[in-house]
Image (cartoon, rainbow, N blue to C red):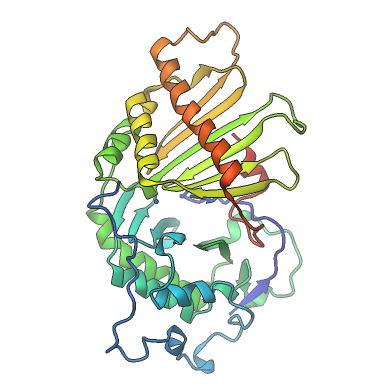
Length: 381
């Protein structure tokens, strides 16, 4: 097996990977086609041997596991058990796998609890509830939540040196409720249970992705989001407001709002450490946002617009993205871009009101032991 290194800081994601879902932040980050069920993870059938209690499925004897397989606390186990028993929130789960599929080729797949998935963020597909359940079972069986952040080859155990990012073999991120667990496989020889987990996700996703949905450009993606053929899970909106100086103080605007599907997370950057709050958007609120983005034709807006304060708006659907910087540019006024400026102001105004609501009513998120993004990556525009 591999050497296991403990890590207590934040996780840099400048890994040169083919997938950006910052995450994790994360990449990174929920009116879908035929309205995807919010309970895709079904309770086990009573006739299925050993299925009533998820723990009963862990039948691999010790000699069948790698000698360094994790033996500590599985931070994902309680949430996985609830999902497998049919009492958990499927919308709170996703798994993100970036793993080699051939020489010099990394493939990135993300699967959400309701079965919506993305392949290299370029294709949307859907898995069956049974497929999603099999992934949950595998995560529980291999005790994924007990792995440390870095898994390394056995022969490197006692080497103490700076490791280049190119040593990364693959990465798996799982988010379940408030827990985000990241594991990076380092070196050339992957730990076999991590490899089996990654390959399972990839193989379940390969054929559905081959007949999945793509978008030609951002405006096409937003139109298809509004029409329901593209799921909200593949939408990400980031709105950023700050004063134009390095260290804004208390009382000065410095916030970031991230919307991934129906999940809105507001980050108050006037505090150290920053405070994050979460609020779920209702279906009408999410539809309003999608309609605003579609009607504004965000994909066609200028990348530089006017704003009285330093503002950023980034919108992404699958692999199509638009990043707009707005501030008091020299030679530009609020009238320079006419209707396009008004469309931007309308979208950013909605984001600003949502930021205020999440900041006032959102649930404070716990600080993560493992972060899918470094602080610098979270706060950059």
